[in-house]
Image (cartoon, helix red, strand yellow):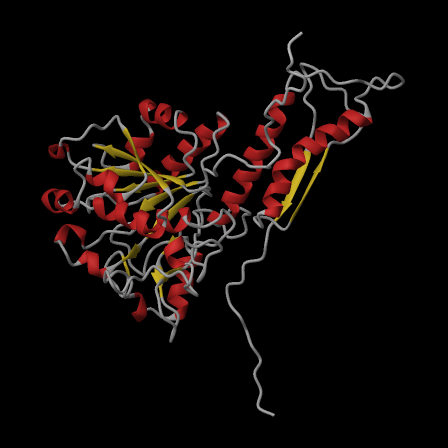
Length: 399
């Protein structure tokens, strides 16, 4: 025997650390004409604007090609400096054509950490019709069938006016239409006059927790450079960005009545505007193309559901094809086994509760089950959403 005496082995998990969250990983898909000479089959993983510029995507790229690409990327990282943007350049001018390709389906099956995709048309020739929206939802449904949880797709709604038709009659609860426009960008080039700020929306979502409203005046966790600020607007006075806001047809939002603004939200459009007498430009929220009565009529609800679903799935997967004791008398699954499985399934929901992403949860495995290779074990789960206050009504009196 040697004189080892006591051996100490390093353990894992005692500090309760977890892997970095993937909530801030987004993808930008942009149509760029063939003349730009890009590789349309590559996913560029960007962690900063500089990384894009090293690829040759700088302000000159936008100017020379009469497209907005560097702008959308810079907006993403301006608002979400700690986010990750997966860039895909395409020669397909429409989202419907792009998302129908088998190669694209394979692409996002390989990048399952992407939470949302923004599609930039860079062309006034494309009108976002119901077929475009439906194609995006079909793509999301296909990934969902493969157990890939994509929170949503943002489409660039170019040249949309206050007379826009409702998109709430569609069954596309994970597709959002962006019609917000920064007039300071729209006036740079005639090609930009009808653009919509998809990169700004992606950054605004990436910097927020899944349960936060896209238009919240403040955010729960600000980037370090903004921690002393009371609010988190789109506005940057030093850069001259979002000093005002327009719809994507160039209509100043300040000229719209409250009824007209409310109607755009009710019809399923994401735009930007201001609160009277209060500094800063903010989004109206994140409505989706489904009936207002649906549980999935807002982007934040989709984010919460997907995160809870993915958490539960990943927690229970290690138990698949596992061995569990039955009750000797009834032949059904033992109550102790049920309790153990319930505790496993609750762990990701408890993490969401501690992170203040939900207000409560419940996960129950009904008793008297006899699972086998033909019969699944039934699990009932629910999460309680937090309240989002959209308006305050104050009764103020003089006494």
